Length: 332
Image 1 (cartoon, one colour):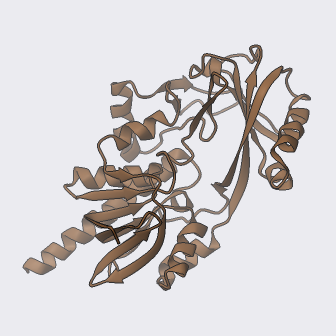
Image 2 (cartoon, rainbow, N blue to C red):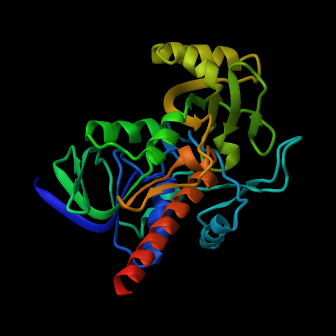
Image 3 (cartoon, helix red, strand yellow):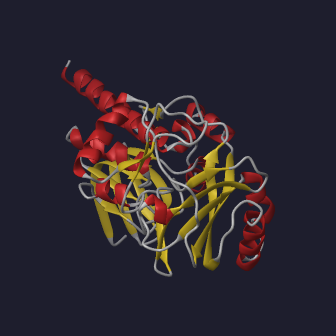
């Protein structure tokens, strides 16, 4: 290996779960390293630009129900990184404001990552357990060494990584992860030639076999040009998953034509392979103190942004307690 980077805690996955876990651990004085195979932070808190328009094509907003997450949301609100998009849609829940990032949803994870040590475009390919430490080898020939390992990737990817590393996960970790099932999702990004004419706040949910959600990113306030994000239903996404991109665009716009009047200038498609855990694990995080291994992410926290964030925070608290207990035993 060309490089061996050492830290107290290594976190695989720089989505919101990994970022919040790292934030809490760093607040507690730990030396934390994150790695992610992607080119950006945030996972499904994703924003894309093309043809002069800006699109949030993953998570559209988030809500806050729990104090542990509210603490950080208050900080982001005070710093101007986030704002309230709307309180409720017609017939919806008005108790929890829908928060968004005015510079695109991905600007929030990028803001969080500013104070963290993160290596992007770094795919973990093999894990080793050597002398009570974890060694993670990556495609770029860099290896990472840490006492504690946190894995926040989707459950199937987590299981595959340990399998190809010939590491048998303890049953209390493996069995719950094997039971998790995910839905697929398609995000259709439509650059419009004229405004969508959607009423404020610029989004709409549908009880429809093909289209689940649409949002006008211009009305939302993140795009200077008319830009519509369309999320299909999981069943429709699965049915057309392997169709050529041009076919996907045609099929979705045909379905959309029955619901809203639009003039499409250009379009792109994003496939979300793990868009939502259908049956998330009831625990917020899973841990094996003997191995100094913790599992977090949306497989445990659930499909909402807050669920993933709280899973990461829970993982951090598990590690903090484990380290504190170990120190007590060492000094006893």
